[in-house]
Length: 586
Ligand code: ARG
Image 1 (spheres, helix red, strand yellow):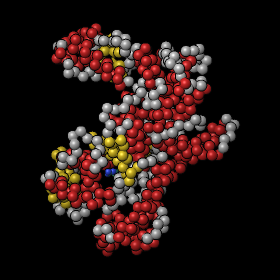
Image 2 (image 1 turned 90 degrees about the vertical axis):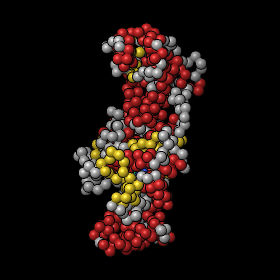
Image 3 (image 1 turned 60 degrees about the vertical axis):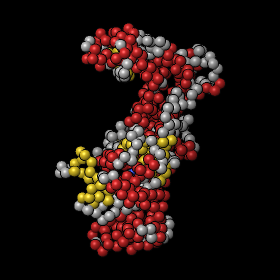
């Protein structure tokens, strides 16, 4: 109802100008959804904010504004409440006309934005030769949902996988393998990711404990960085190996078009990047390292906190790579927005890196660059999610377990109903429900919340969960299907007509979709979609309880069927933005 809110704002301003003169031309009234439906649909505190400037009690101002307010078609005459709030209730005819205008619209009334942007979502970004962990899972799921929302709105989206595929750790790993398992460096498939992780741990141990090994590992880093063909090939094999197991996860999660552009991609741009920063006078040498200092950043001892771009040994690091990346994204990709979906533990890095890039003048004023942080996933013991033996949980196992639980639930439900189904169907349903449950559990909370990972809770058919929402779809869709409503065949007389209070509530909720999606990309909060869908399904239930659909007489029957159909399509669309499919039965 974006247009409604804007038009209410305009009308409030016009009424204020009519009453108090053109000096109020520049005000922008705040209009919020009413906290209590008894007061109406929207509320404005405009009179309270003008009281000081106009030297009048807010209530008197509110009464003046209300008397001059142009209701024309949208709402009933506003009322004044409490100290001077202005309450506005939408007219039923207005809601009807809005729904009728969008009832056949595939976008369900969500307008295409005036300016279409190129948006980069930096997401997932696991590290080669390491297991992908739950932090990467969150980044993948949240990033995907943000990307899908932008894309649905009409923007051009580039999803970048900034994998950790470069750096001294590869010298270490290659050295270890050369000495312990050389086959891995020449033959593909010689190792799986699990083995690689084990070798990686061993290599780290050798590196820390054995000076000679350290020296040999450094040689390998030099060989790698100077592009030695044999070393590069070995490195590529290791990357391929990891990539294969990442791909399995992306397949399970239905993540497509993720463009891998890892740290190595920027390798030949790092020296120039640091040089350019030096050219801007931003780089200071501190104990042999090249650093950028920014106002207001102090370390624990109260000393200036550096953003290191080149280490004492001359090596470039994570920050240099991100600075090269941001410049590439702006100059080559022409990004209008760059969004980093990375755990909250890296907030300082991103804050400083983005500020440094802005200070260097690399980021045009109107380009939005944002770190989108998120909290950690906890086990049922309230500690960081780990396996029983304290290892990082393998995501593949985690997702498979969710699917297995979903299967058990499905079998139990079928047994309850004395029903049997084909195995193929059961496999498909439980795999979609299991993975969706993991996604929804993650997305339904404010991303900054640390949440407890519980299969039982996320798979429950009650509460704000994927199975609940997927089931709500099946049910609502079932009603509209049974009613035989076909939007393409609807004749012009078939219209939404609202009379019952629960119908009006459902109608308003349906019309909120565009506001909700705008909020999602404004604050990078896919949880808004989940809240919205959950509320929609509740409003639908209230409607369905109070209003007979199939047994109603025309034209009410058709009107209600249209409401059912729009509800089903809204749920389907909302879930698709969360990366969750719908089923016809489950
Ligand atoms: N590979 C990093 C990690 O696992 C995340 C990279 C995030 N993206 C970025 N542009 N720095 O922590």
